[in-house]
Structure formats: structure tokens, C-alpha cells
Length: 480
Image (cartoon, rainbow, N blue to C red; front, side):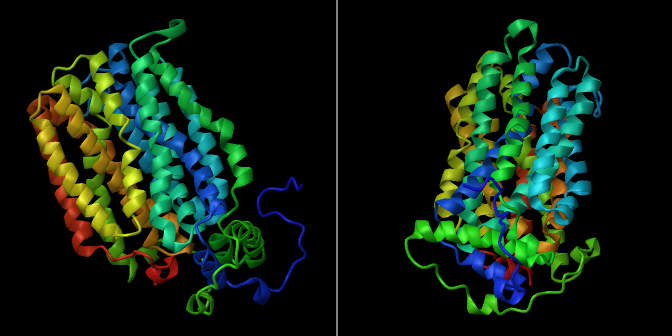
């Protein structure tokens, strides 16, 4: 058995006409049935994303431990109080903003697989160093550095998945990725419930929770050897022979599992003229047809982060503010967090049956309605029920927009464009930490959810009125 990485074979070179142009490579991918071989690739990328989500969401669950240890306070007298928990949240999203705004274009330049591995190693190392720090400024600094790696990884995985799977299963593939990734949320909540109130081996419990998230580095290279580079990206870069070799190997596995001849590629797509291999230009996102999409997604991301992370990153703190003790608050938070994977399960059933934009709008509406009800509840049972419903809507929103925004731009600039529009959510989330802390201090939990509801209204307006339809369309037809 060969020990070469996926797609690296000793086949002799063939002519591009026989192997396939970029358009033919795309058509061959889109005709693939959804067999185990395709789902296995999605699963492997999901494993890398699991640690990314663990790192992203432990912000909420180590918060009470950081306050308990005396390193941070829940709120501060000034809006930009860097000793408050809001500063820790802001540092996370400042790093995410830098990563998505400045560095996601590297995936368009150096490839999806290279940046997937590099960013996973980056944030794993920075997270481990952060866990060893003993002051709020040092923790904030390393949290920011780790966030840069997470920001790159977020966009790279979305781009990677969209290009590896056929069009008829993109919605389900993103829902499955989120299903795996969101199991990280109850995992971190459970570990926080166990460790945060304690000091195993003399170390604050929150440090153990953070250090577990650094284990992603241990699997980075194993995943890299089993996942090929994106054939779409290779073909777009003019590397048709390499793209065809990878696709030949994948097609052989799919055909063996399918048990009969693969469907023929779409004649229209396969015969489409290949675009010139021009280098992606940032200015292109401000030209038709991408300008309207760029503006729509900038507005969407500006507001969706306030609604999504305004609850997800503050669940334990909001519960404590409603009179729940830290220990009970962490338990209730675990119950709420345990519902995270069920949103993507619902998404797998419906994501390819309804328009992506419709799913986004309905999920945002649910967050607004259930969040308003949450603000005025005091019963622990109702708080948990409504927390679960908000979480389900939040995960469905995430499933919808992660698939949606990568569909709206062409392969040659997909990571660059998505990184730019997605960076707005990182910037918004960075300031949302201060905004939520300010609203909580002066207006209580009802003020927090008034802010979240307003943000969701803007989300519904942006996508509902201006977002294009994408369901069951090829990436190339959407981008044109």
C-alpha cells in the first residue's frame, strides 16, 4: 500500500485536454454521489474545526473562573475597562478580526490544505501559552494571538468544504461540519463545570480547560495527510494535472462505494469556457456582481455577531446576573450547551431543501423572539428551555450563513472575499463584549436582549431583502 499523501501518485503526466480543464474539474466534483468517501473528507475537516470551536467557545465558560481567580471583574466602571471580562472577550475577537481581515487571503495564495494545518498549529500553541499567564494583560495578549489563528481557520475550513463537496450536498455538508464542531461546546461546558470551581494540582481550573483546547496540534498533521488539496483551487491556479490526479483517486473510491457507474458531468458545466488564470484582486469585490453581495454580507456580519456571540459568549454570566450561583450557573450552561449539536442535526434535514437565505432569516427571528422571553424569566426550568431554543436558532443561523457566504464568490478569491466580509463580524464581536457588559451593568439582562433583538432585525433585513438565492446551484453559476 502506498504511503504517499492523498492524491500524490506516481502517474505519468497527461495532456490537460484529457485530464480536464478547470470547468471540467468543477463539473466532475458536482456530479459525485454523497458516498462514504466524500463524507469522510468532510468529517476529517470537521475534526480540525472541533478544536477551533472549542477554542472559540471556551471564552464563555472560563469567564466565571477568571473572575473567581481575581484576574478579571465581571463589569468595569469605564466602557473600555481592560481588567473586566469584556476585555478578555474583546481580545478574542480582536485576534479573530486580524486573522480574517489580514491573513485569510493566504489560503487563496498558498492553498486550503497548507493554511488549514498552519492555522491549527498556530492557535494551539498560542492557547497553551495563554493558559500559563498570570495577569490580565498577558492573558489578553496571548488570547489575541490565538484568535488570529482561529480567524484564519474559520474561513479556510468553510472555503475548503465548499470546494470539496458536490453542489447537491453543500447544505448538508456544512450542517454536518457544524454538528461535529458544536459537540465541542457541551464538551467545554462539561469540563468547565468539573474544573472551574476547583484547583487540580494547584492550578486554577480554568487553566486546565484552556490547555485541553491546545491538543488540536496533536492531530493537525494526521489530518493533513488524509485530506487532499482542493481540486477546484488547483485547477483555478492552472495545476490541472495535479487536480485531476486527486479527483481520479476520489472518483475511484466513490465509484467502488456507489456500486455502479458515476453520473455523467453536466455537459453545460463541463464545456464551459475556463476563465483566465488571473490573480485575485481585492478591488474585484467592489465591482458587479460582487459589490452588492459584499455590502450585504458586511451589514449582515456586523449585526449577526452581536446576536450570536452576545448570548453564546455570555451564557454563564447572564445566568449569574439573574441570581443563579456560579456552580448552578455552570450546570445550567452545560444543559444549554448540550443542545448545540441538535441545531446542525435539524440543519442536515432541511439545509438542502430550503433556500439558505430563508434559513438565515428564520433563525434570526427565533433568536429575537426567544431572547426577549429569556430576558424576563426567573424560573430555572424556563431559563434552560429558552436558552436551548436560542442556542438551536443560533446554530441554525451559523449553519446557514457559513454555507451561504462562501457560495457568493468565485474560487480564485473565495477565501480573500469571505475573510474580508467575515472580519466585520469579528470587529463587531470585539466591541460587543464591551457593549454587552455596558448594557448588563446599566440595564440588566433585558437591556442585553434589547440589543440582541435590534441586531437580529438588521440581519433579517439585509439577507431577506438583498441576498441572492443559491440552493442547488453550482459555485461557478452563483459566482457568475
